[in-house]
Every structure is written in structure tokens, then in C-alpha cells.
Image (cartoon, rainbow, N blue to C red; front, side, top):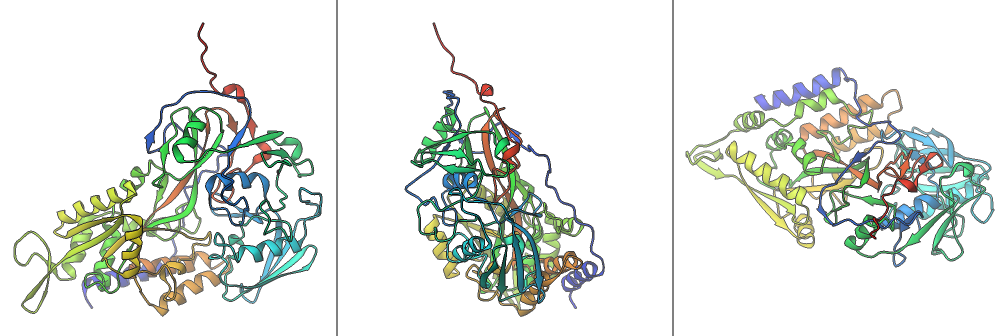
Length: 534
């Protein structure tokens, strides 16, 4: 057995023998924010505080919460609709419209109880039929259908109970139900019926506090006005002028532009994972030992810095904010160029001809190594990370060509397999099921890896109950790291941005950025007023 293979086997054996305690990094503070700027080009700021609370919406896009992909509309929908369950910044679940759940058949059949006493904005009672209907509609929507792809059926048993049957076992299925509830029969409507804290006014140009909402007495605003600004710069200018008061922002997006310095940026954890993928047909990365070296080759802290601190560095395909994250194991794969060089040497990669770069020797023939690293040119963060990697690899004798492409070209090259490695990101589900990027038949398995053992290990993780879940997750992570089909880099934090001192009490999370709404306080007097001149 080679040195590298023995090292891999030892790492796996150590992990199997004892699961170290995980350590999450989520902050449970009700108002976790950073004051100041976010990464990006900053526009000039003026102030035109109007003493009313307004949101931006784009009515040329869908306002249906099961369909809407426009972030402005998603923010509006968060005030109007309720999620079936809520998942917090540590990826722990709490009841909401669904209050109880139990499973039989090892996680393939689920029975859910629905809260009693809730009503839609037209006064009709919310029942299990509405929730079941919402799930059925979500199964058809582009926004949610991927996470629900293995739901075999869903039906209401009575007014308070509905049943879901799955085609594969998943003891964490309830974590996937951060899905808005709409009224039965309204999916095709432009504004489906909702049961959330705010209801649309008759002209759909504002939201009014819904008096039958459970905590309506403590809602912070009677009316929220809807305005429409098109384009990133126009929206940011409106925010800077206090014409709109709350913004969602993805700091890694190519549309990211700074929102000035008179703001509060609340970063919340997401399941958006940045990772490196490999081509299984590449002569360089068909060798799992060379792929394994890449676990140590990326300076993840540098990438987090490039994201302005709005990310959590990870070496595992699980967020460090989750209780499932095994920090002691994860730390074994931190950035270390000496380990990269050692693994390369053990794999037979040396500078045989003295030109300063590594080759692989096959008999008397030398094979030069020059990695084609594909990256999307529209992301400064990803391009800079790729350049840093190329510089680091040069220092250990490996040639890397950073292949920057626009989005359409990037996608075509990835799908065609014209690369050695590529920088990608994917939104995982809250159960951190990696099957969408690693399973043989998965559409995002661009590297075209096929491993029945991997699928077995992932299946055991999903089927594990509370008592065995951490160990099963450790085993899954160890297998993925050792095979190195992907190299995880970080999980993004997204941003909810408000004007400084205006809103207190927000508990933003990935699927509910306006969490804890009944306990907000809104103080317009804290918005700087325009200066007047005589």
C-alpha cells in the first residue's frame, strides 16, 4: 500500500472510531449585524427620509411566493405568507404552520399536523388541505421542485393532518419544508391567498397589518408601502435616499454594489456552498490522490475575505453553523501547501527535467501537467480565488491556467467537460444532502463521477435518526473528502440591509429574512433628515 493510500485509510479509520464534537459558529443574538459597507462599488448617498416604511417590488416578475425568484418580490412575500416550518441560522427547525411531525418506515412516510386557528386574509380557515396543496404546487415550481424531487405523493387526511410519502428515506425531510403556504386553488393567481402578518391592499400597492394574525397587536407597522425601482443602481439609489427601507443582497453576485455607510448589514447563514469540481475524465484528476491534495490547496480564509467576511470557510460539505459540522476533523484539511507538495511527491509527481515544474513519469516518458481551471469571469471573488490558487500552485511546481469565461461560455464548457477543474457554487438543502452534485444521475454532477459506495454512504446519512445522525454525517463527509470528488470552500452569508438605527429585533435567516417580525421596533426618527439651508 502506498504512503498516500495508508494516510487516507488512517484518516478514515480515525473518523470511524470516534466522532469529535461539532462546533457551530452561528450567533443566536436577535440582532446580529455589521455596521458599514459591503463589498462592491459604492454609489453616492443622499438622504430623503419620508417617515414611511417601503419595500421595492417588481411586478413584471411573479409575486407568487412559490414561483418568485426576484429577490425584491421574495422579500415582500416574506411579509405576506407563512412558511410551513422555520429553519434558523444554525439550521435547526422550529414549528410554524406545521406544528408536529412523525415518520414511519424509516423516513419514507411522514404525518404532519397543522396549526389550528389560523386564517387566510379573506377570513377562510387554514387547513391541512391548504398546506398539502401548497406542497403539491411547490413540487411543480422551478423554485422548489428540486428539493422535493423524491416526494411520491401528498394528501390531506383531515382538516389538521396531511401525509407525505417519499421514494427514498430521509429522516430530515421536515427540514426541507421552509415553503410558503398559499390558499387552496390560488396557485394560478397573480397574488395567491396568504396567512402571514401582512395582507395586500385592494390595489396591491401596499401591505396592511392583518388583524387576525396571531401577534397582530405587536406588529411594528400598520402599513408597508410598495414601490417599484428597476435595475440595481436605481434600487440602491432609492435605498440611499430612504425611499425604500429594506434590501436583500447577495455579496457574491455580480450585481452586488455597495449600499453606502449609513446602514446596518445583517448577515445570515445560507446553504449556498462554493466548491471546486473536477473532471473524472481528466488525465490529471482521474487520480484520486492528486484530487485529495486539493483539499489543502485552497486558502479558504482568503476567499471569505474576498466576500467581505460574509461567508463561513469550510472543508466539509456541511455548514460550520450546523451542529453536524465536525470541527476537529474539518481542521485536518486546512490550507497547507507543504502537505500539497508532500502528496504530489508521494503520487510520483516531481520536477524530473529541472524546468521548475512537476511532471509525471511513465517509463521513460514525462508528462507535463498544466491544469485548466475554469471560472466564471463575472465573479471577482471567484476569479481572485482562482488566481491565488494558481500562484500558490506555481510555488509548489504545478502549472495552472485560469480560464475565465462569461456565463454562457462557462456553462457550456462545464457541461461539455472541457476543463480539469472548475469553481462552482450550489444551493444545498437544509439537510446538506450532496446527491444533486455527486450522484451518478444528478444533473449537476458535471465531473461525471459514478460511485455506488458514495450513494450508499449518503443514503445511510439521510436515513439516520437523531441518535446516529452525527456519526453518519461524519462518515459521509470523510468519504467525500477522501475521494475528493469535490473540494468544499465556504458557505455564503447573505445580507438583509436596513438604515442604521431604524429597525431592531430582526432574526434574519435564509428562508425567512424578516424573522421575529412581531417583536421588531421601527424608529423613523433615527433616519438622518435632509439638511436645510436658509
